[in-house]
Length: 344
Image 1 (cartoon, rainbow, N blue to C red):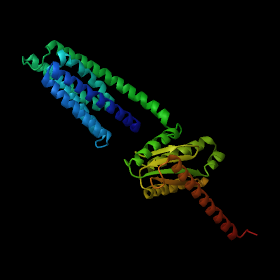
Image 2: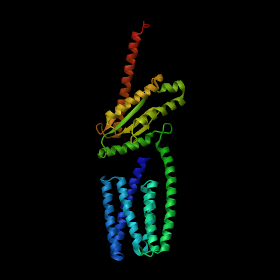
Image 3: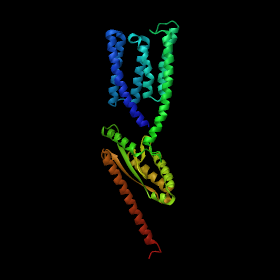
């Protein structure tokens, strides 16, 4: 959920930066020519600043969190300026009501609320100073009091709506991207994620990427002896073991009955160590049924950057490991049979 949410927030930030920068420059030029020259100059400077932030973000020079903080800080400064100056013909106060929507788009509910409390505190400050007789704004006390009341109400409604939608979207997301039995990611999401990560590998935004194909050996034995309900419980337990072996940023997925796929940014040697530990744990728990794992690893970019090619490579290496294991077991069985005193 976090990856997809960040992706959508990044797209929203690009849109907000683009629209805000051009609107600031446009209104700034209008103010310079027709209304408030000093305010217009500041707006043009802020617009150029946001354009710079947009370019740096698109070029990957600054990350989302820093860019969004710069954007919201600029908006806060601009809104405070409009509250004091009034903007074009006193309409500046209306723009502050866009801040809750923008901030809740870009930040989590609690963080967005803190950003809005800063603007609300400034509104209260202006109201208090105006009540004491100081001329700090073009707006009267009644207008400011109404603005505080409406803004607080609007902020509360946006917060409630955002919280409800977050929970609702979380449920939809889990239904769409999670395997219902194991809770791991499903095939569709994993392949989509892998395509995006391989694009980042090609553009050198990330280093190496490991694609691990895992298949359970002799798993059918559990289903045959104890039924599919026991097999489902075993799959859940193995999935949990697999999930714990990898970092939160890695994608662990169930892509078939007893087939799994892992996308990890770890080095191959580190991945192999984890998988050998996993094999030992699985064999220890399910030794009665001779259940184990076979795996194959493909690494981008050393094994290529094409998704189909990497999946084929990992799949071939997994089946090669499975055949090797069967050959070893068959050879061991023949030697045991040969050494048995009951052999004729």
